[in-house]
Amino acid sequence: MLLYLIIDFYIFCFIGGGKIGRVIILILLFNFTQNMIERFLGYIAYNRCLSGETVLKYRKALKKFNLFLGRKGKNADHPEEITLEDVSGFISDIIEQGLSPTYCNWLLIGIKSYLNYLRDILYMDVIDPHKIRYCKTPERNVGYFNEKQKRLILNAVNNGTCGRDIICLKHKLLVYMFFHTWLRCHELIKIKVDEIWENLQVIGKWGKRRTVYLRKEILDMIEEYLAKRNKKSEYLFPHRCKEGQHMTDAAVRGVFFKLAKKLGFWIHPHKFRHTFATDLLRIPWSNIYNVAKLLGHSNINTTQIYLGLNDAELKKIQFWLKF
Image 1 (cartoon, rainbow, N blue to C red):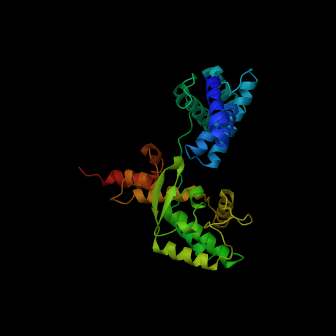
Image 2 (cartoon, rainbow, N blue to C red):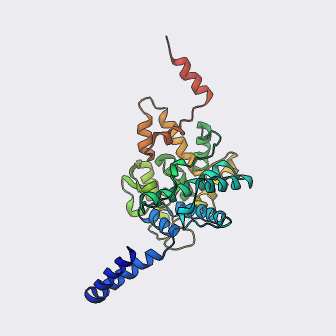
Image 3 (cartoon, helix red, strand yellow):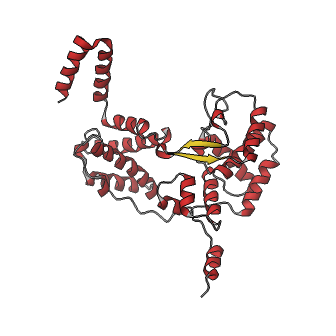
């Protein structure tokens, strides 16, 4: 089949297709010579719009799996040879190294996505990814900021004593936007100045688009920050050193690490998102479906982990019922 395709394109390219045809055949031949893993990574990056960080994680997972297969004389680029026993043996090997079930599941997500691509996109005869079971993990305890912690964070950024006023203003804007926009960290740092109106059109995971509305106080804060900012950049939060790039996840975590040391409790960018969801679900007219839409979740089960009610609140709900 491939031979016939090359012959047909050869006739088109070198007899009737000219230079454009020659470029087409070179591109096709390049794609056919790429290994399976690289083709998969290209597919999820450009067709499924996954973030660069996610693509890198999948690459690392498949690289580890390929090294394990290599010890058995197999290769992930020849996926017809892979069996369920290979996958379970790989995970057993990872667990024996003392790594957590959560880490194992992260590896399995990459392997299952690769196998799904081979079955559903390339129609290859490989093992059914649905037969691969995830490791059991402890119940996830999602944290959120209580009222006292929220006040402490806001007081700290409102009365900040940074080396420069613009740095304090930048940190203050970060905190307020995390509190009021419920964005993921990688979504927030990629905001461009020309995208800011009364709302934002955010492209989240899996390329899903959603609308985030901005309060007037946030818009005023952005206007003040941009007026005082010396660095010209298309991004709202530019990289400190590299021109044309946005602030990194690590830099944001560094800001909150310093703030956490000062205040004495753990602060993580995603914890603001947890707090928003938990607070919103406490409003009488709100429901989990509204929260799922605002957070950009297509699956309600994902939103359920944000239902962070403590024992006192559960007791209050139970005693509220009257018979």
